[in-house]
Length: 339
Ligand code: P6P
Image 1 (cartoon, helix red, strand yellow):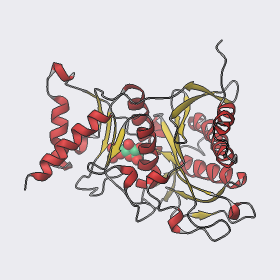
Image 2 (cartoon, helix red, strand yellow; image 1 turned 60 degrees about the vertical axis):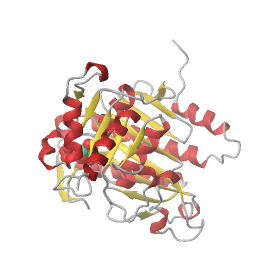
Image 3 (cartoon, helix red, strand yellow; image 1 turned 90 degrees about the vertical axis):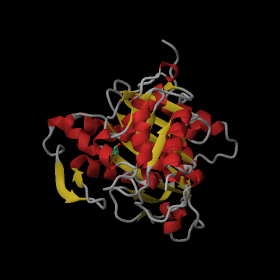
């Protein structure tokens, strides 16, 4: 069997590639690795214990009914990150405000983490894959001073690392530290993530479009025109494309990362800013998309250039194969010109 590189070995190899690396980021990624294993085990048991399935009956800051596993995943990632001592603060889809780790180690730590602990959690009860999305920055405020909102409201281009865990037919951890994207598949018999997808590249073009067409009537004109473009017959450009929509951002993006494609969550009449959250969904996925050779925009500007204004702000999201996102943007720009 070809020699296998575990995530732990890979993290050490990566660190050696950066002579000035202090090992803090390596330790942080290891904390995420641990929490991913714990959450993965619970998700795989979800159907077996009634105390896991279903909602806890409370709503999160988004007004969405929290699934028990949302809370479980949030608690496990929070605990793993606080215990490791490299993180001074955490922002989460499941937390109204950011959480400060002000223990002896936390207050002197250099990093903040923003996380969607279990994205797509409404899919759990129907056994559809879900994911954890994380985004890592160096703090802006000096070490030792109190953590503040500006540590979390940084543009996505400041990220030092980002990634996701996809709890699917197999569990994978896919992440970047700014030098490409690598994918690791969890081997439960070993309890280890093994490097299965080195240097992942997002194909420049593709034939898969991923959007909730049930919202068609609520979409802007440019998005409607792009959907029609995807459905037209044109052999030269391999159209009509294939429509694939899982309803789980991580799963839809992961498929497009491997095969090429575009994921779109645009503005709609009911979601005038779009649905996805900039800080812990769009920025990390955009960082991965760009590191793998793709692009991500809000339909007009690069996601990673957006200056955040609030922790849970939403933005329209177009991400995936460069040529497909550029094509979609053309339809948006053309329709915008029509006054
Ligand atoms: P809709 C899940 O709730 C999520 O945030 C993404 O994972 C997913 O792509 C999207 O929302 C699905 O939203 O409105 O199509 O059900």
